[in-house]
Length: 467
Ligand SMILES: Cc1cc2nc3c(=O)[nH]c(=O)nc-3n(C[C@H](O)[C@H](O)[C@H](O)COP(=O)(O)OP(=O)(O)OC[C@H]3O[C@@H](n4cnc5c(N)ncnc54)[C@H](O)[C@@H]3O)c2cc1C
Image 1 (cartoon, rainbow, N blue to C red):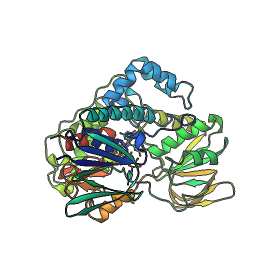
Image 2: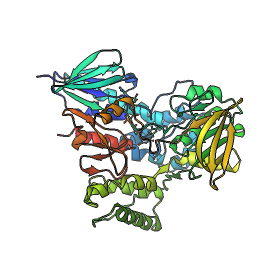
Image 3: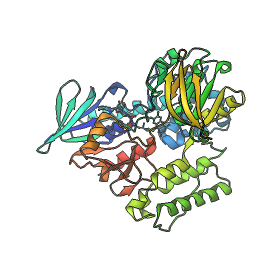
């Protein structure tokens, strides 16, 4: 009998669920999301309007080869046309790319995220066309899913237009955790996040406007590139306030690519001991001449076919690994970090160590209240303030994930505070699977770091859908 499979979401994970789903001729595959005509892009690889100054400004956080080898090959083979589409853009991506282009290392570039979206969206469309050719009916539905209900094993998906679809299987991929909120971050001159608010921020920030980013995350680096696309460099006045007062460490490939390899056989009783062992191996790799990027690639390779549990057999201990290991290996986009420090020397950017409490509107902008390193209460004013603080410990999710958590179809891990799903992404309801960047355990397999990573998300879905 023919089946109805539903995928909820329109980002990279949903696209991977849809294109790798094992369907039979006669089945129907429905993919549902608000931006369904751009399936595969989601938040990270979104398409800016053609005339937006910030088009192609945001970059992948790691070199192309680490995101997707096929994409990296495509960059190489289509380089001439990519150069043409990137020429005369500010900030000048081609200039920053030059050292790697000169030695033929295009795979080492942090490509524009929208460009990856162009590539991955096209691939998705092509794969769905093949499914249609094999007599699977593919429906792309532009809508938000309000709810999922289960009655006598019958699954139903309820859309925001009031309609209901019956399903035999449902895959939910509605995205990662949302930015933690800061009092006063959603007002005339303050914004709860950058993505999706670009036009309003651009309108609020004039050519000489000052701006404060709360946080020093990857989103802060995107905000800097956004400002660079709008303001002349001589007019930039950009301050980041974050607890550490430091930018992320740049993932900077060398002239050749030689990933570190870690030989690790022992087992560990405690997460801490395992993390120390990894740090020790990383230090050895750094001492032997590997760069930070290569040590991070080595970490990913170590866990490609092994789980943390193989090294840390106690599941509770294994689940403690994800957050500290993620923080230790967290790196950022070379181009943006280099620009931040270059502009810092020209007093155009600045980073302050501080803990932000609230934002208040003022006549000309907004004022950020924070405690500095020595415990003093301080205020800093700017024309515009943008919250780039990242999810923190709040664990705020989209409405559907929140409902699934409330109904205990999926759960929050007590050790990592990430999300727990069952084997192959199963929830506690037969026929419903879930995956997103916040997941830190799949069945009893503890992830070394959360899945904030296109390569690992896609690989996990491919494994779920393998027979
Ligand atoms: C700004 C940003 C930059 C990133 N940069 C990188 C990077 O450079 N490299 C990397 O490897 N990873 C990066 N990541 C990690 C990233 O999360 C993954 O790579 C990946 O894009 C996540 O895809 P997703 O489909 O799980 O989530 P999303 O991209 O968030 O997509 C989920 C989609 O589901 C839709 N949705 C939500 N609720 C519903 C509902 N109820 N009904 C229907 N649809 C719904 C949303 O509108 C959204 O478009 C980045 C993440 C972000 C947020």
